[in-house]
Image (cartoon, rainbow, N blue to C red; front, top):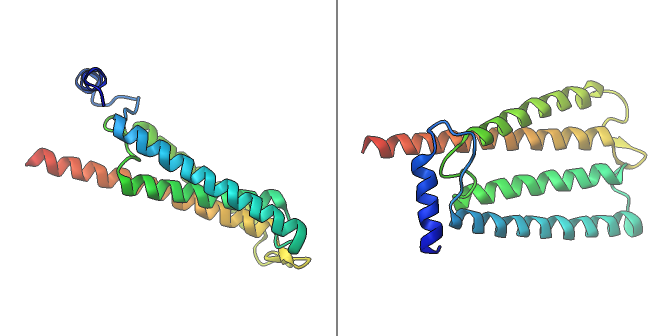
Length: 170
């Protein structure tokens, strides 16, 4: 980080309000997030190509190609979240409100999606339809993964807030 960018970063930290709506990341966090994002996109791209090859040439394991891609995308999103949290770049140095709002929004939407998909729970062909995993089952699994992402986001934010409180007391 150059001296000029460090000065700009310090200025933003000092002049920003405590309840700032904008999330601020330092340079290290931006670089690590970018690397993890590229890594997750490469994993998604490779798994999507492999999935398409398998479903076209070998065995159509899912009723819908779109549902299979959505499942891969949700798994890669969860992977990205866990990696960012482990590297300390998921939460910015200031302004946690956008992440909190996103976590709550994801939880609400995933619960609504679960209600829609598991409305058909117990009906025939809910899990397997014509020898392939049904769209409803995969959609429910995607919504469960999104629910896990939202809860994980809120847990990481809570952990970070507690850590900051402990540091302030010292």
